[in-house]
Every structure is written in structure tokens, then in C-alpha cells.
Image 1 (cartoon, one colour):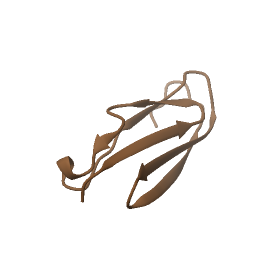
Image 2 (cartoon, rainbow, N blue to C red; image 1 turned 180 degrees about the vertical axis):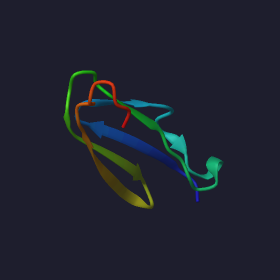
Image 3 (cartoon, helix red, strand yellow; image 1 turned 90 degrees about the horizontal axis):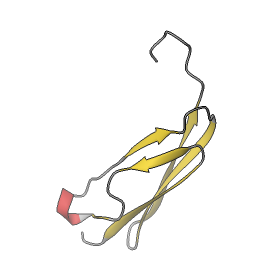
Image 4 (cartoon, rainbow, N blue to C red; image 1 turned 60 degrees about the vertical axis):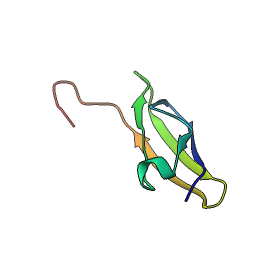
Length: 71
């Protein structure tokens, strides 16, 4: 399979990593990291789109961290 995958993100986070990556170059897999925006909470939606395969999405909830505690 060829073509590019494009990622879009909405909500209190930013996308870290290559956006618009070639689907076939990575053996049909790919990904990126997201980083929450300091001091912001809420729902984050990440959508991956491919011209032939369509789209898929995931929703992530960003919550406030507890001081002194790793989550």
C-alpha cells in the first residue's frame, strides 16, 4: 500500500513528530507523540487519514496531574 497518512489534532495538546508520513515506507504502520498543553485539560481528538484506507480516530482525556505523583 502506498500513499501518505495525515494526522490532525484538536484539543489541549500538540502533535510531536512527522506529519504526513509515507504509509508504505514504514511497513504499513506509523505514529506520533502528543504533548498536553501545560495547565490545560479536556478532550483531545487525533484523526489519521489516508486517501485509500479512509480515516480512524482516537479520543484522549487530558487531566491535571497530582502534585508529587507520577501517573
